[in-house]
Image (tube, rainbow, N blue to C red; front, side, top):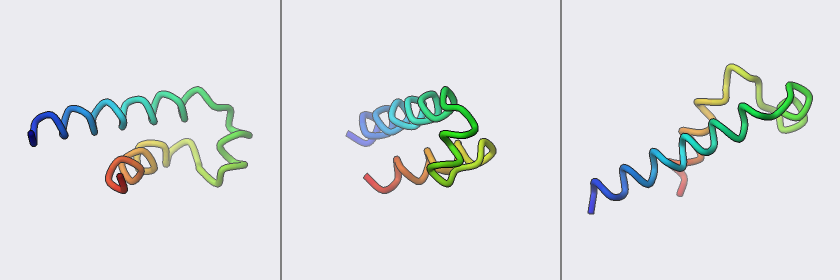
Length: 49
């Protein structure tokens, strides 16, 4: 069960990084996210769930 959860979290992390990475700098700024913070924000989003 732990392996399944780990893989699910990894997929969610990668999806979040991908979606945020496709946004323009302006869109990220509107969300209060710097481009260098994308991985950290994605990690935090996965750990909250």
